[in-house]
Length: 192
Image (cartoon, rainbow, N blue to C red):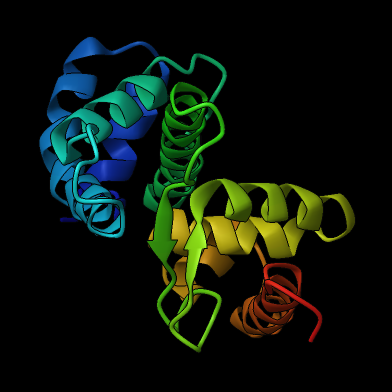
């Protein structure tokens, strides 16, 4: 929905929330909840069947982390969901690492990457391995790593990523191709 100024309701509420308007924070949740829940359900479907983290808990934890950020000057909806992607990634990776510690280094939680994200051959990839690979990728190509994070964890389209990063959609597509190839090589179980 657009406001009279042409901004979306989400953008307007984010701006108001940035100034400390508590009522804006309360009005924002219903507008973003369904999309955050859809993202959470998507990632949790990729997890093991006995996963203890529920979609509702993941959404609430991510939302609380987002709203508690005092230093964020929310620019628009894409910016919000970009930061949400980072928050969801941190929560899932922290949960996976905690689970591994409990099992004393046992099996890693595995998630399937669909062909639109990183790997085309249907292999599964562990979340901690993906996080480690993205950290490594960000050391030499931060934008490509951020694009993977925004697309995979944030569910943003190429157009939304371009808007968020302030680059052309073509640049996003090129970096996306590079990141997919780099991740494919980095996450391969053996020599290619």
